[in-house]
Image (cartoon, rainbow, N blue to C red; front, top):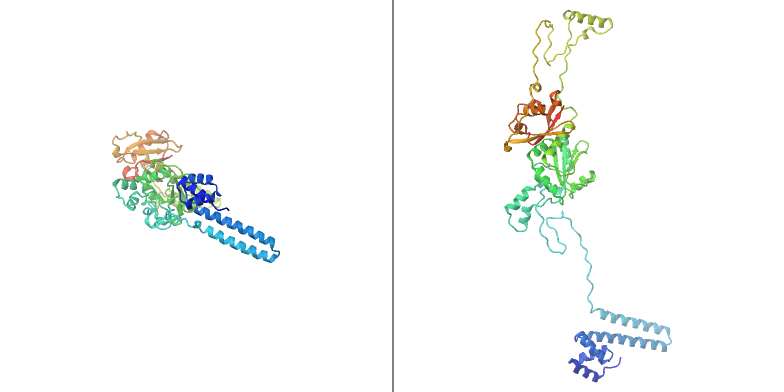
Length: 465
């Protein structure tokens, strides 16, 4: 490259008021063109081009060496010398490239990190490397000794506020209590342990799977599982479990029993692990108790029937001298046909354990007065609904055809009032006997007890004709 003209440098400095070194750099970059150098200076705002100049000089020097190499190769006739010279040239070019690259920063080194799940420790790590806020308190879904069965359930507002350094206000405490899990109903253990417990206690296994993103699941905790009647029925007839959908036990349950709709409540037969009944919607306590009562009436975990066994009839053999003429004739006919005369007469002893009298009663004795049964003593009466709502309860009657009747009764009313209402309201109940069943228990033997004593409040009664 030609050297920069000193006159051009002086003129460049007079126009731009720049230093001679700066003028020399711009003229060098622009190959000695004064006009282009001034334009470049104005457009770049007087940026320093010393690095560019050195780079261009290196490129020029590299080109000169290449030209000298080519000329030397042309003049030399030896192949070995040319190879050595090429290696030396390549080495020198590599050294220059390394020097030029040393001014560029090294690329950012790759980082390999592992994403940790929510079950890792008491604190999670944020994606930017800094500590995140601590996790909430132990799950409100499960008892403290079974917290490993599920991930944190619905937010524990009081514990979360305390962990963030805030004061626990009465409002957050009320909200946490409102949606808390029914720990008093839940069994302590996993699915297999609870199933074995239900099998040993002859109870059904009830499982509730919760999904955090669906508010209807939280409503179950607030409205259904907190109801006193529901708690009483569940404790008496079921072993209850409640799991989070993405917990270990929740995923295990979903693997055996597919589910797509939440909230999910299911009844499992502990003997066979068969899912025999499912609720896949939000349900109020009255309808839930109605369905449970119907289920318990139709299913049983015991082989024996719920009806009391009838006493066996006692067989009493009369002596021939004590038989009447008809009985003696019948015995003689059996004997003539090769039968046993002693089996001719079978007298049933109605009172078990009391021997029958061997002396026949006189035919002229007056017949005993027929005793009126409890059911026949109940007359049809249509009771008016009480106006005091605090001391009254709504009872739903379900007939065999699926129809329903709803009527209000006083909590102090006897169970007899339920039979009187059914006899007065249901046409078929006036001509044929029936039974009222509450959660699998017949009520005819407890007609003199009050509804409060029997725990019949906001419940459903099955009418069995």
